[in-house]
Amino acid sequence: METTKFKTNIKCDACIAKVTQALNETVGADHWKVDVTNPAKVLTVEGQIDENKMKEALEKVGYKAEKI
Image (tube, rainbow, N blue to C red):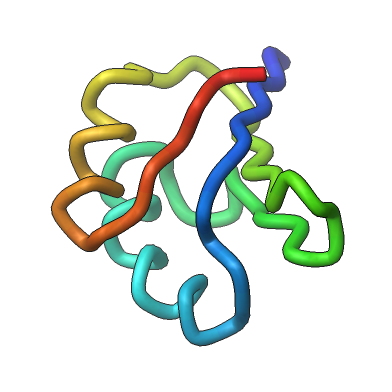
């Protein structure tokens, strides 16, 4: 299974709550996680994704993701 990582501005559990619906709809529930303890706030996505749709969904709720 493919793993893709993104640097984000998702900083805390409240931020994760805000992006949950957007990420569940675009990449699927249980296919993503955010490491807020990492200084880069890394979003890890498992499986095939449409990066542009995911980034657009995050931007709609006020967050950004940059592939690393």
